[in-house]
Image 1 (cartoon, rainbow, N blue to C red):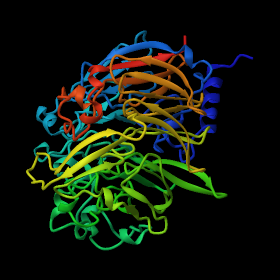
Image 2 (cartoon, rainbow, N blue to C red; image 1 turned 30 degrees about the vertical axis):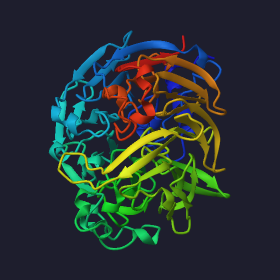
Image 3 (cartoon, helix red, strand yellow; image 1 turned 45 degrees about the vertical axis):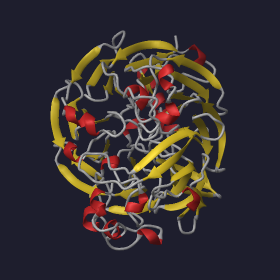
Image 4 (cartoon, helix red, strand yellow; image 1 turned 90 degrees about the horizontal axis):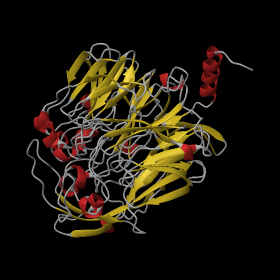
Length: 593
């Protein structure tokens, strides 16, 4: 039987809907075809592609289809976007935005937009000058620059539509996150937790760039946008002005809680979900109290920014356990009942499964080796700290596991509705730490800790794992020499992709983790792989190669391997990385012959 083009497209749409991940809705632009319109693919943050031409059986035949140099050599943590016949890429500082024509052989450049950010922003970026991607909506590309600007660009012409200045580099403030567009709002958060920057999430009008609301992570309720609709599940998150009273006098003003991870949205609950970063400084003895609302998760209404609930994974965070990691929204059958859950692999080493309607923790299970706590009380939601690894000024505390980047840092996981597994790129690092008094000077590091990281149990420094949230256990795991700092991609062909710091781009069997294919790129991979359907109807896989970020700082920053405390102690664990890879900035796109 011969199908018309219309029939093929209709069938593809039906298939896409049939394979739609729970929590993703028909109105979501990500489910309509082979596009990849936002960093995480969809509002539920699944990073799941319903394309299935590339399978566990034929992935071994993948070949490079085309490559593209970004002209930048720092860490490439971004995800390419694909909308129709065009691919869009945001590079690290100086944040060039490229449009590539997928209809033409070799995907030549359609246009390049140069935002010309302030060069001084490079000096206050904590962990390389990275950018984690853009977002497409209604004919525009929205992206952030390191110097705190959000810019809207016409997707066809590459012409600037508007730009908004959101922060101040003189205070140590930067923006590295990928924006999310929800209900005509562009959601953007700031970075700068290591500079004593006060965190916030801001909503901009997508049409004009004008600020609609800003919700701070610390301070009085009027600043945090806590009102009558705020109903946290646990008692410790209730009370007036906790963002002030849980800090020593005035410390909330320089207390961190930055928002630089990925934002999720569920149209059914009409809530956005995001994590808040670590409190500042790292030295916890300078900030007695729970330090609300850092190292936790907020749920808010996108129209007004009003908080619905908050849960704090690491109250009075002791080890730089930011709560910014992704929140993946899925619907699961738990103990015979259908639950709307949020999956959050936190830096403190626990994989949280929460009811996303109210913030109740349904389970919190270690997915890495942990010495800093002894579990999570599901009745109270409290993290049970182990006092043996609590930092004490003037004393070196050893064997802190996980290390400050956590069981997993920003590198996003992927969810497959076919296997019902969450695929986690993560590290296996511990550390020794000594804390000291930190002085606050605007625009300079505000940390108060000397760290030296080292490999965790087993001696390897990274892993790629598959997690079964219903059985609450690890399904399989792959040990890697270095921290796995790339994102993950799951596809309907039951193939999962990720990259390594040495530069290997790998495809593994989604069911058992068996290595199926690998390709050595020109630099280490810390980017977010994607999959899309090209104008020719074929499925493609794309990823940015270019080592950097915190884990690759020794290469991207040219740091001295003899200083183990460099990059906040990461260099002590990655001193041999310069012998494995060099700097780069290249897009790789793969397809079957």
